[in-house]
Image 1 (cartoon, rainbow, N blue to C red):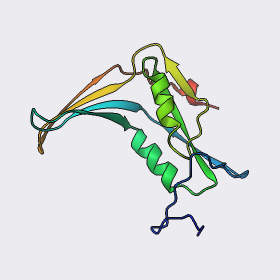
Image 2: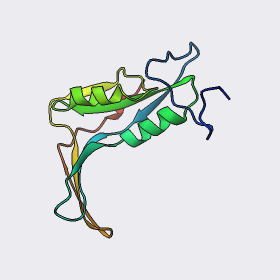
Image 3: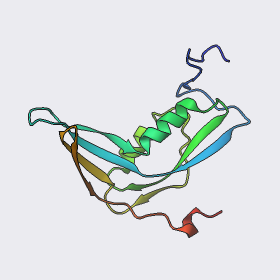
Image 4: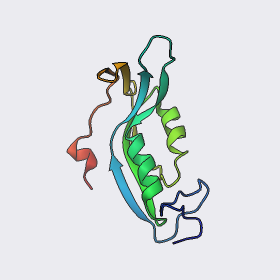
Length: 138
């Protein structure tokens, strides 16, 4: 185990750390979603944050060995493309290259409203087109 490994056996690469020359890549296909979360009660303020594939990307970036990088395969809505890229660049171990595609429509958003612990409603908007097999092939 390297010196900088955390006590639990996992490690988190610094954003400026260079990947080794024998780098391995893991492509991850998914949807980056902008969530607006309304907690129970009318007086609490809502939270806005990245959801969807963001949880998997952050977990993989932390859990993978040092010689691995994660390459997200994403379509981004034009309205949040720049903000999406800024967010992705904050995750150590993420390699931003193609196939990131910016679509002309709005980015996918989900509004989550919690009534109580047993009740939740979700409303999705701005759905990005799905990937076709011809777009994912070699």
